[in-house]
Length: 280
Image 1: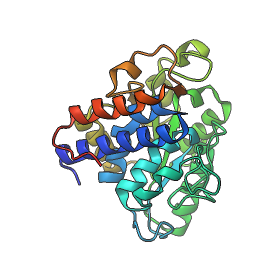
Image 2: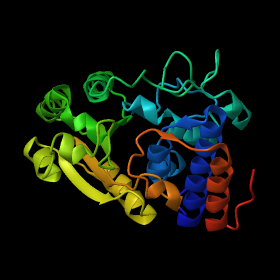
Image 3: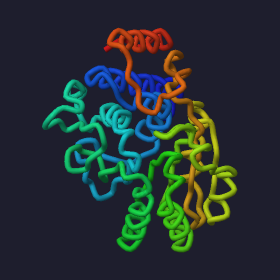
Image 4: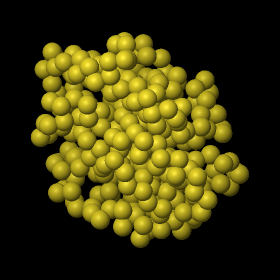
């Protein structure tokens, strides 16, 4: 799927799924889900090679959710991909659910790693990429991570290792929303000029607006089409709470709690922005 209108509908539904799951628990990492939905829509609606009915297919591209708290968005992508059924949404975060609040590989089909201990995904991705290359497997490894993980030394050790081993089959996706648990990411530990830093570590770098679907689509296609042996990183500048103005403007939106009526208000706002979509 590469039609922008269709991908826009996928991103809309991912946002809507996240709000429905947030309503189940009354709270959650909704700001990240709304901000990152466009990236996930392109990943699972266009870029990744996978089989919905066989999540462990050896030829699949691996998508590692290093920022495990983004699971509320990732489950929406898996629903759109046909990996898990929509009717499991109401079990989100509940006992014995396949949809825990933080991503866990032992629970959810299509979840490659148990993420959440930030800074661990990229080191794992480096190992996977090396392993696939030794096997002669042409699959890509995608590591999806947050800007908070730029604080972690393990991230930069892995970045240096990936360039040293010429891992052209590794694509890192970084969500730059400038928000983490302790406040704005750039104030917790400044990371700019971030594009220059990745380039200095030997990576091919792109930086795009992560809420501009054509730009996101082009960035994925460019990363996959490169023929050199450099690892690739795409830096996505995203807006927390994208699509729901009263969440976009919250000063603290790393973990959101809202009053019960506001969940339906948020869904209504989203649906009004996509009138051609039939509410589910």
